[in-house]
Length: 326
View (tube, rainbow, N blue to C red):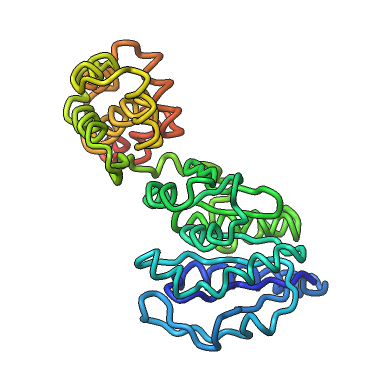
């Protein structure tokens, strides 16, 4: 039987904690119905027996505290909310325990913003990790040595798992169920809980937020110029001339400050503008493409799919109810 420890941190989001517990314990019910032994022993593990979560609205009663768990097979870190720095400070005693259990052979999975607690252990250095796209800039600043992949819903590397934003944690739990219990049980779980199985990308849900939490004022000016003039064809030479900076120096500083190359930043700003129009207007794809400075249809569609994971038509059908009804 696999021992699963679902952590109960202060500032935890109740949904990801309880949702994980429900899915995993349901697997045991499926096994019972088949007259087979349970697969999982699921325990809520806290720093104390009672922990306030979801901004203090709820109190969770843990089965055990960390000092009572000598060895476990899988640690699940639920999403946390509120001020991240404060949440990490309140839950700092989990950090050495997680690292110690991993060294003993436990696997570790973080859900959404639980990635911040996992990254604080140092176990993610040099490894891939997903988290909520809204926290991308904060996470990169706090953990520059982690390979953040916000486009992914699930990552797995050396027994460490992570999931993307919000309710995508359900997909990671299904992924773990499939790994430990088999595809048939994972599919059954997905059907019982009405979860779309095998989702891989959170790109269609991402809203680009230019990283401006830095002190490089000329780069901020370049970002603001790009965002105000996205309809035009903007070149690196124009930006360097405007700011009186050398090209290599400008490109190096831009990448360091924003985590994007200049070309990537321009593309993402233009695509974000098109996405908003696709969600609310009936303009044609060609009209929208020309409006943001593209003239090559193939190049535009390629960039759009790379950034959103969908074609422009697929994106419109997903988010524009009026367009679908026409």
